[in-house]
Length: 296
Ligand code: SF4
Image (cartoon, rainbow, N blue to C red; front, side):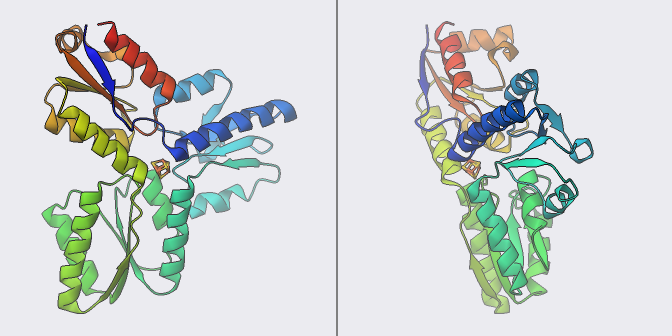
């Protein structure tokens, strides 16, 4: 029977915990006032969790599906400025905004700096809802640099820096701190050459950093690793990338029943299994998985 160790920091972060508490408040409000409860995009990237709230009557909607008189829950990644404007057309919408305060702070930073004439550089995934929310609040030139530092991305950064003279840089909350440092180093070098002004705020979230370090440390000391979290969760994807590089016997699942017989055998053969979870994985899913692995 394997020994199962859960990473010191794993699972739900401050922002998601807050969002889950607000979701329950939204459900209570809907019941009290007889209003339908709608979730504007998935509150967290965790399909099992979303399904459990669907069964409690929460409807997952995109913009076209929003109905007046409902209780509308806004996700922790935040929404765009245009989406905020769109909501103003409804006369009797009860909006419960679960946008993480750390994400909201980045909205304010890029809004203020861009209005003050700074060109904005964002490190992150331009297709992620959180980054879409940032760029929608930028009033001027911006460039979103992907964390992969491909030749094309670096060349695009170089062009952008040569076309403006002062820059303000932030990061998507879930990027790896080392990637943000790398971007700042590259920008510093280029700015020395072109004599541009360059300031930044470190907006990488501690929760992500703590989970990544704890996962790496654990992956080095166990025979196998299991990461639990939504396949559409970017912070879970990053956790898996970190642990699988360190420990080749690593698995990423949303729930234990996804493990194939071969994978279960590989885990059962391990003396020790490390367990970590994305920032949007509720505690009960982690506890269930630990019990499952201990019983292998
Ligand atoms: S990872 Fe950080 S920024 Fe993202 S929701 Fe959690 S606390 Fe907020």
